[in-house]
Length: 252
Image 1: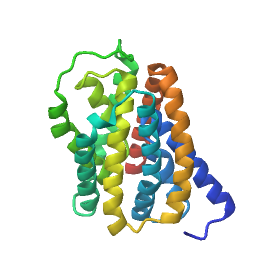
Image 2: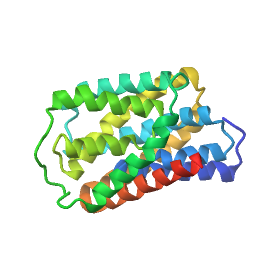
Image 3: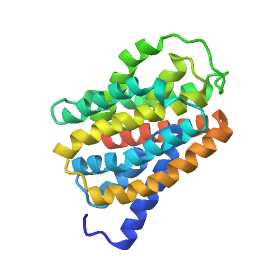
């Protein structure tokens, strides 16, 4: 682990707890943890790799919490999770080989579009709606695309999974959130497997933050399960907007 002061270590652990909470509900936890890791003086590639270490803990906790409440059956998702994991590993492995400047320009526009969609579209609630894509087609198209993005860049992947489940799979907001987490865990784990070879993650720090992620994710999943779309939608709008603004600020 880096030679971190106690104050900075507490800040990192607190950021991980907050990220676990936000990510379990609406995605975007990396919006909190990656800047704080870089603030601690960790180089960008190593910060991304370390972020994957701690993010795996939060995503796993959220997935288990939603499954325990009967909102998702992992037995129906394991094939999609394998696809997401493989795609996440591929994206992370190619992170230095694929130019992402064009995607970083388009990404804020997409995120603002997601925020506007969830803020303005009427009738978005926890009730299922018309399905536009079969589960097999969803697993063959949307899952590898978003999983690859999660490994390659990462921020916003949870929101992309979620909007896919809402718009294409016909899930209600809470059910979409629950189904997102296992795929998010898988693509995170795949990305971590690749980053562990090329990004030299700080394992001890990542695990310490991961323990905090467990607490935040458990609390977030519990509240989302109780309140549903009334909590998930506003938080998703906020995280997507803030992430878009942060990406624009980085470009400027």
